[in-house]
Image 1 (cartoon, rainbow, N blue to C red):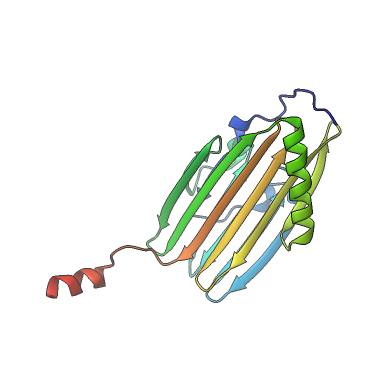
Image 2: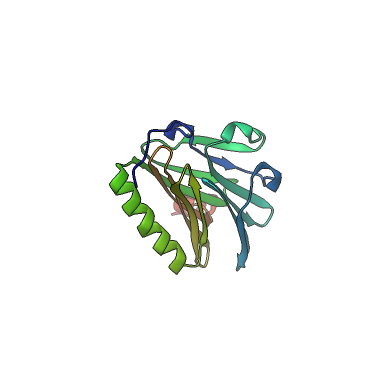
Length: 195
């Protein structure tokens, strides 16, 4: 299978957005969703062609991650940060001194052969796993979006994979939503000053 150059989607269009608020499903063409809870927190994954949204809720705090190529259609209210996905980057944020959010973003533009090999590998991985998988074609060439998570006592690890044949892009995101923020608390400072 040979690809012809297309300009439907640009790598530069992709962004990761972090909200301190829930988002309404009407902003997305949701293809698959999954809800869950573990201990004191709840979460929900939404998968759509070329992107995902993930809501993490603990007590009265809601944090939402969105990875999309259509970020300009999303609301500005509640936004904590917007990160372009091109290249490699890491980001960390503390939300209300109660939740730590850490993400790592990597993008690659591949040759036809490497793109198809990566597509086949991710398709097999998605079919064998328990994540959400969406496969679709653009002008006869394959695309894939996959999101999966792991739950732990006080955190959720989220992996997103988005493969776009129109720009032969592979986008990988790995995020952690953790209850409690690392660092010194007021209690720790009081103990240190009294010693």
